[in-house]
Length: 313
Image (cartoon, rainbow, N blue to C red; front, side, top):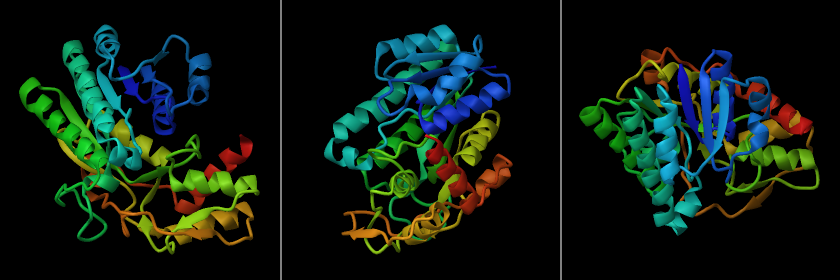
């Protein structure tokens, strides 16, 4: 089977590429390298010749749709996105240009190529807005409060249109806070990667914004990739939460990572970020029913693997 991954040089996309190659897929990876890195797909490029091809392309360009039409993937995993919420607030049109117009470009290419299914990396942390209760189920109203969340919701709505009118199957995976090896500790990265970079550099003191009581649902990248692979053939027409259902406070996260890294100093505390959610966790019950998926990596094990990867860099 031929699969195409947009954003495939990112930490989730490249891990997905490795998994698909291990399962004998032919894989095309598309990435403009604005946030992804060639290093993430280096092994795939050198050891999987004949079944792996890398394309440096922006999903907004006409060449993107042309490539899909030429390669004719049977499934597209759409992970490419402008994923910085703060950028979306400051530049909502730019965010929409990538996340909405770029996605439509991919979908039109899929239509021309006769692609059977699209699996979208959705954002469980922004899709539901301010949750009434946690963990959040998929039936919760989708009322995003950031342009990034609005764009991600719109892309899911477009996929419903392509399914109903054009017959392209889809699944939206609403991802919790994904962490693990290959995540970039710089720029708009996950807090796990940022903490890892600071804890291991020793000369940087990790910063907690607010009192550290805010909670997130941290899910390990290998578990998430397994959900993507399962979604290739299951959960058609559904939005499915991919998380643990468990809340971990930022303070608890820092304490665990500091212990694993042998870091003795306290964190630096700064004012809370405006508009930050106080609590966030996703109920993965639908994933168990429709994907046969459950998270299996305990957070301490995932953090240990992540820190080990950062140490080896």
